[in-house]
Length: 394
Ligand code: SF4
Image (cartoon, rainbow, N blue to C red; front, side, top):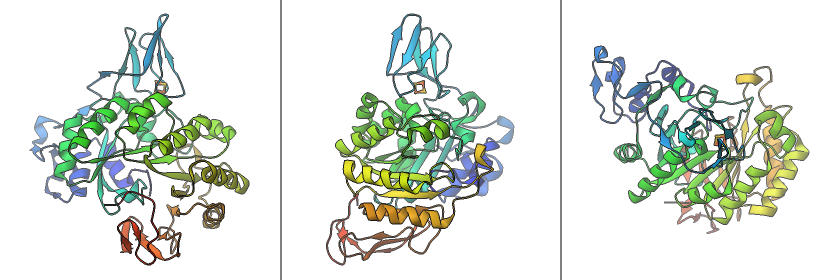
């Protein structure tokens, strides 16, 4: 579940043929899967003529924002990595490059993955439930998590992938055609695609579409404040509550992520938190207790937290999956700390996806996987007792 691309879709992606995945997901039909499809027009291109809108390698680039020129180098100021780049040098994220003392984004208009996902898959459980989100992913990430679920995207340069040619107005038009409620910037770390995300999100608002940012939260305050003007919902990974673990597991630091949570709260952007419980790294009960206490003290108990089950991935294939008992323990800790909405992801328990009313404990929204199976929400409040349920509701 969660932020991972569907494995079947990823196999299609590896064969340079993502378009059928989105067409099939949207119910348009599968007849054309044998050939190439243009995902914007739905037209089939004869095999002999090549690959429609799928671009071998990357094609577009755009001057980036948030950098400063220094003596013979350029410093990117988008994220806490603060990469200093000599001419032709590339950032840690692999998608921002110094060309003649100007910083360029190499992914503008070049998504490598396009799908229509239920909003519950982000996961966002308190944000227009039951709606579809037009989801775009790109090459690149500013962290290097040992357990990355989407490393085939995030740990690649754009020219190592097959990409779509898709600009902001095309993303917005297609999202509307497919009757999506939102556009999600997801799969890789979308912050490193800042310019595309910002331009698309502003256009989307003009068409009454919502914008969703699925992120590691590793971004500087100034660009984050710009983003807050056009992002409506976010899911932020809080990967641990230890700077040491952040350095070893993710090659990042903890404090910038905490700062992002505080800023989103202060700017009134709806967000939910995901914590992956990785055995031997992020499963320490005392650490989870400290993390939940910080959340309640700093941003209150109304932002949902999703404890997600780890599966052996990427560079941590030697570790076992998270024991279900550890997920249940984390849920108990969070509830005891005062977090009102606690969910379990990547593992099905009877009520791991159920929203309970903090007022009367009635079931307000019931889910199995990404599917809503019961709803007792009236005007954003519990249908049983009238207690307001935090979130963004239709
Ligand atoms: S966004 Fe990329 S280039 Fe910029 S500081 Fe972060 S990792 Fe470096």
